[in-house]
Amino acid sequence: MDKTQIIVEANNLTKTFATKIATEKGWEKKTVAAVTDVSLAINAGETLALVGESGCGKTTLGRMLSLFYQPSAGQLSIAGNAIDGLKNRQLKPLRQHVQMIFQDPMSSLNPRHTVESILTEPMKIFPDKGKTKNSAECRSERAAELLEAVGLSKADLAKYPHEFSGGQRQRITIARALVLNPAFIVADEPVSALDVSVQSQILNLMKDLREQYNLTYLFISHDLAVVHHLADRIAVMYLGRIVEIADRDSLFSDARHPYTQSLLRSVPTVTPNKSKIGRILQGDPPSPINPPDGCPFNPRCDRATDICREQLPAMEKVSETHFSACHHYQEHSSYNKSSNNKSSANSSEQAVNIDQLDNSGNPQ
Ligand SMILES: Nc1ncnc2c1ncn2[C@@H]1O[C@H](COP(=O)(O)OP(=O)(O)O)[C@@H](O)[C@H]1O
Ligand code: SF4
Ligand SMILES: [Mg+2]
Image (tube, helix red, strand yellow):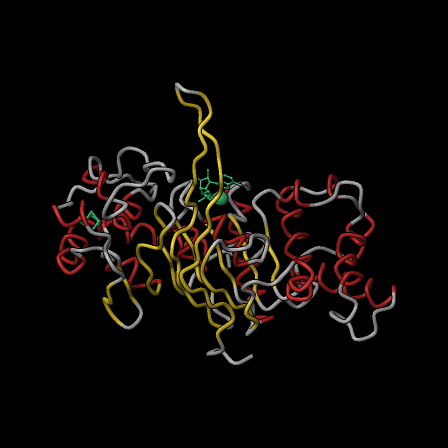
């Protein structure tokens, strides 16, 4: 696959949900803006990480890009197919191009089905994918091949999900995601529910599979240390919007958005740096039902000025591979470097430790 080929292209994607909130007068209908005006592109073979606090819209964006949700507005194209306005029936053939890996492998695997049935099912739904000859024997062969690719064995085909550990179950969901040779995989917090030692095994596995099958990932996480290990680029989301997007090294060494800088300082380290205390992000994000005027981060930003409370900042170009939606992005470089060096270094240290393990979690 051509590495410069664009696999995912989103322009001004927006998703709103109708909801009801309790007020003194009873239930009131409101609109939640879960994702607002998101534009991004992901190239073949690239891993774009999506980070941000809980509730900022990561899963909603991931579900739009994996065709689970129809956007409320905006345009989306996957592997060259524009999906705007398509009906469910027209979307079905496109769904084979996109697969999702979920946070909780147990709830995403049918407990009544064997691993073989779980892995062969997608080949029955899309008989023209996978092996050219789609006989039961060929499907089984492909299932065994993928199970071995994720570090399990052919004998595991006959087992049920409850017979595996959490990490092994996540390996099965990864194998299932690969069955149809997808153009694009959305992994939504794929290691958050796993023990730390198992997390590194799964991350290394995803990295190895990416090289082996030239996979394109959207990797969703709230953890910058995890993202450092796998991402080529990182998009930071706040209150439904992308507020900064950059190649991994620029984001860790020269973040321009105060929210990204706060996230970097919040990365837990083995040796806590006392000078970080007090600068760590305080309070909760505002409600997406009633977002603030101007910059969505202004109520929590210690560098907000009048313009921040009045005007929504546009995405500004810091470099060819780095964009930041902050009115004062040019002023934040030196602040970032002097106060943040330690946290970036520590994040990198953690990632290097993960890098030193093979995909079974053993030191290399
Ligand atoms: N189906 C839904 N109905 C109403 N509100 C929703 C729905 N799904 C998500 N939301 C709201 O949209 C916002 C973003 O949610 P989500 O995408 O799950 O965030 P994240 O994955 O970053 O935690 C949250 O405020 C959430 O409550
Ligand atoms: S635009 Fe203003 S409020 Fe928003 S992040 Fe930048 S400095 Fe803070
Ligand atoms: Mg989520």
